[in-house]
Image 1 (tube, rainbow, N blue to C red):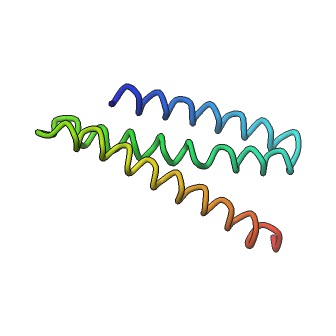
Image 2 (cartoon, rainbow, N blue to C red):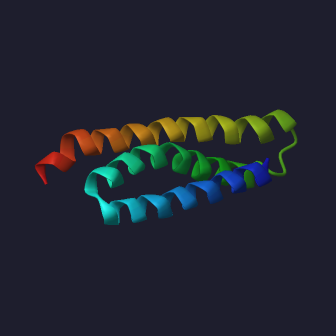
Length: 93
């Protein structure tokens, strides 16, 4: 599970680099890319952290379920925070 979590984290960092490049070329494209990047970044960070913490767990269910559950929750949470920021806070800046 740790390998898959690290692969997801590497993919999310590539998306962050793509978001930076898109933001330099166009503000609207940068906002669109940040919507796309928020979920995988949240998943990659939380899943990797939980995979490291539960790597030596006695139960295989915990070692697999905790990274997946926390990763999915964090993906939804990061995506929601990004939407709230760009809909309510960013226009007033």
